[in-house]
Amino acid sequence: MITIIGYRLAKNKSEKQFICLELQGDVEMVQSLDTGRFYATARKASVTSTFTEDTAKGLIGTKMPGVIKRVESDPYDYTVAETGEIIKL
Image 1 (cartoon, one colour):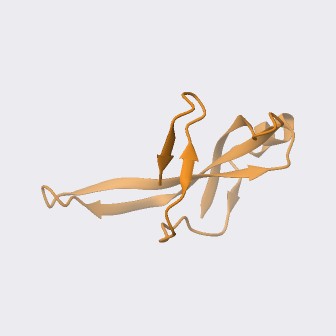
Image 2 (cartoon, one colour; image 1 turned 90 degrees about the vertical axis):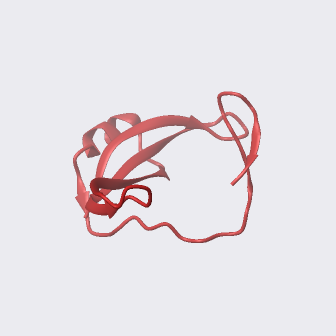
Image 3 (cartoon, rainbow, N blue to C red; image 1 turned 135 degrees about the vertical axis):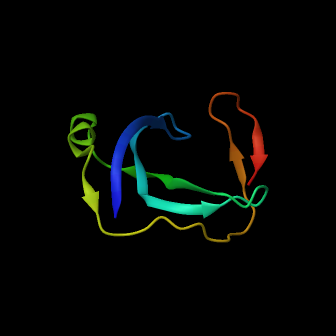
């Protein structure tokens, strides 16, 4: 299951504001590569939406079926909003 745990306001290149929903997956046990010990964690992700801020507030705590997975992709440039720095992800 995926839970909506929050939201944030973001702006696109033309300075238009929109809502990003903050998502969190189920708790999973992961083994540390350094120590070999296990620890509990949960994957997080954000997704853009067309919701208003009031709707996003009301959605916090909503659970949906699904999982958050890391998938391989081609490298791309990303601009850090706070600093304007361009980094390659």
